[in-house]
Length: 325
Image (cartoon, rainbow, N blue to C red):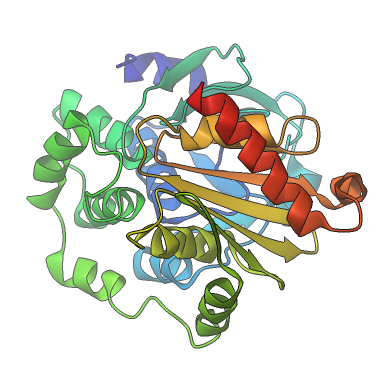
């Protein structure tokens, strides 16, 4: 673990922005919020920011529950200066899911594998189940008890990103669960975890079920209309729950392009590497061994030909063959 006080020293006297990936999920929001509050305790003010949308009920409920203020890029763009400092949280520069803001990305705190190496003045990039775990460790290592809201937000982010401790869990995740649980507001946590599906979500489930195709142990599903990142990921988990499926690949057609989500329970198939390999030259993708996401941007869709759904399937089947060698 990097020395958090090095980050505090780096930030002193500068305007600080904490940037998440473009469609912040509960783990990204919790991590940014927890970091903001910890920096604040050392006299460092910061703004939370993102590009894209807050497009899932679970994320918007978090913002309301903890009164978290996050600025979309279009609102903060006029105020940003080249000399402003940006801390990337739950993402890495040039990872494919984060906009390159005006400002200097001086620091990165993330739990994803690195596909485009970058140099930062401060970095803490470690593979864990959730980025919230890394932020919680800062509190623990310095003997600082997080307030109830921070602890609850971090615990919620941790539970969501590990799918209730069933996916990608590491020893630090388990340890931080114990640390955060003693400080959290259990009633607020239960409220956050309840009723996180909207009626329109059922249409996406229906489309995914109707379109599923099985190739050996790989399941492909296409959602032919715009679908939020978080929902595509949830549907990937749903498809992976089928006994016949070891790798789930779900994609949705949207205004910004084709969004993809991959899940793998086959130890020979690394979901992030699979996405990175399959989308090479036409899009961006990456992630963990068990889960990953990617995007084929609108301007690249012409490369897919007349039958993009078939083309995408073939890209992944070829990438799967390479992964299995």
